[in-house]
Image 1: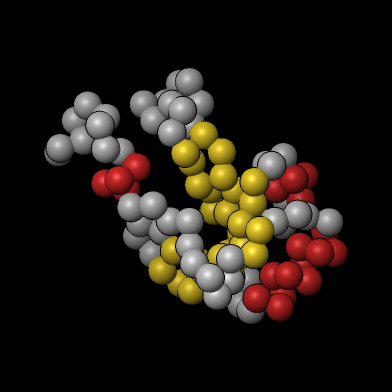
Image 2: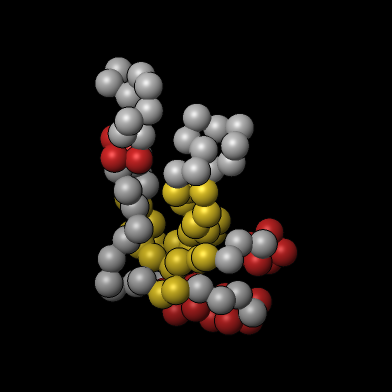
Length: 95
């Protein structure tokens, strides 16, 4: 786990692993920020997978030991946004 990189993000969530092309259910750490100016998605929300563990207890212990602050969403939901929703309104999104 790259603690310094993870701590560079202000908004972190621990939640079941789920993305556009996968759903593991493993406790996973995600960072949340926005896409930069050089992206066609500039200014839109960005969710970045950082790490996963086999159990929520392992994840919480590792994050606590590393001094990483996060919002715990295990058992209460996911921040996953479907790609079609995230890219709505971008030219060429109808492809």
